[in-house]
View 1: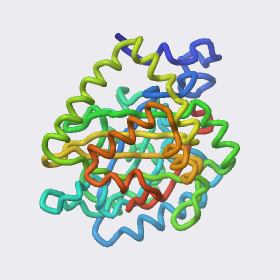
View 2: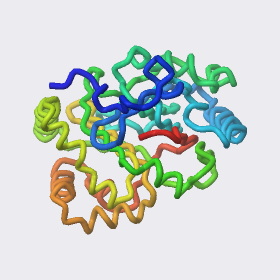
View 3: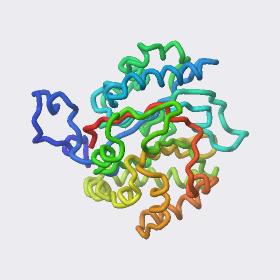
View 4: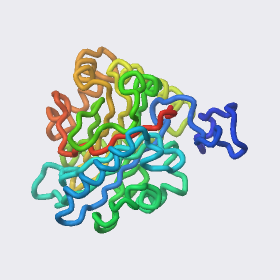
Length: 318
């Protein structure tokens, strides 16, 4: 079994003597399935400050249009950051009797080389200490502790995190500069979305959770892990850059938190619908049977109540 990710990294690249490549984090040589990690932070917004948060982020991004993810969150190993304005729908199950009233919040989706390093043991503190948004006044607009969604948190299960091995070049061709995408009302150069999808309650949710536990155990074996990481033909056909699924127990059911960064939403759905690949066929079959409302996910367009405020990537990301 594998104990760390170091054997996936570019060990023969020039370094500055600390393991970094000329001062940059030691990245894996390529993307793939579960090569990188992701986490979600949900920071509650103080009452009446929703528009102030939107304005602050819009102004900051406008002043940093030549920046990238390192300007937004200068922490080693961060490859992608998307900020969403959540109206309270994130994490809801669709069952009014069981949903928690979560209110408005700023949602951070962060992709990192390794979520097991010390910085991400306290992700809210790390984000607050590192991001210049807080010195710009964001701290005064938030209230309470952040809710952290990640595979190592109680009640959560990592499902899959997929990165297109060619996404760096594809992003540069499709978007180019700036790497901090237009925000707060401007049209995004590529679609980015996050949604929460409730599974059927009771036995269906319990069965999916148990099956995922078995799959995650199998993925600890080198042979299974190596095979899975190279299975990226579907994301290439869909022009998907980043795709992440996380399972969370909410009430008597599981909820899938799904993030996607893609080149073209129409192409994504067309490729998924037309694919004869066994993974795509199995995914369609599975989602139709386990999701409480499969049409919200399987039939375009993918609608999200979370508004994209900032999307930034590291130009050197794998």
